[in-house]
Image 1: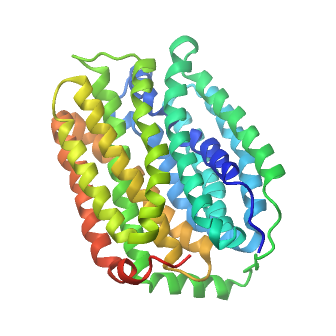
Image 2 (image 1 turned 90 degrees about the horizontal axis):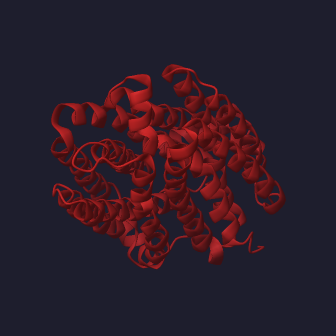
Length: 391
């Protein structure tokens, strides 16, 4: 079996697609003032995208299983530039949310298909490196989207952020088209009965269902934390600008370090142990953010984010270890749950912040991580003992 593309290609594609997901997060205070809305309503700028990603992921999984992983990735990048351009001309928050929803429908075309491509087309000895590189790229994209959005919006306005996202999507289209070799191990699944059979098999897979539950809860934590963090830092005593708030998201860069370091740990100990360690780290960090000094808030958020990154690596490893067929559909079901958690958090955490401020948000998101530990500890019990060596 050929070794596959260099891991840096997967890192680059992960970065470029994830620029689109959370870029407006650092702009939420600015957008709230421009459109005259509160925390829960402006949070839908992020929630519209994650909701669409959740809804589209299983469908994209079926599509990629039938049409091919490479063609799905390239096609999704080609189309992503269009809603980014439409967002620049949005005169109202509902129309901006509509453009963001359209972006969310296309992003899973890259995520779901690329995960399945790695599982099938990369040699077993290089698979962990490729997957880790991709996850690292998504972390870097999550940071750069937020950071560059704040940096660009300060002098040029929020519209310029979406022009940047359009350019990034074109670059992704070029890289994917030139760098991803055509599949050699892909077998199309175009029989509806086979799709239904794969779907039914996944729904009878306790480990996969547990992984979906973990995914929902960990992204609920991440989105709930960062959506409301930007609003907290916009208020006294911090009064940070969009550029300064974007710089705070540099804590995301820790994920670029944590994710590769976690790969050998996950390979040797399994996803269950990795998840429990991640939850302990994340909850401890979130509790630290209750302190008022900005350095402590940033340090606590950094620890909380690192825990989420480690938990996400554990969950992605658990998805591939728990299935043997219809991998795109399995990954799509996981992303349905994962981004559904993000969509729920954008509303629930917004209302919680409006009612109780940051002291109300911390128990909400820390409790979500704690529940993720319980779900993973129970659902991955067998994988924790016997699944660590599977590729």
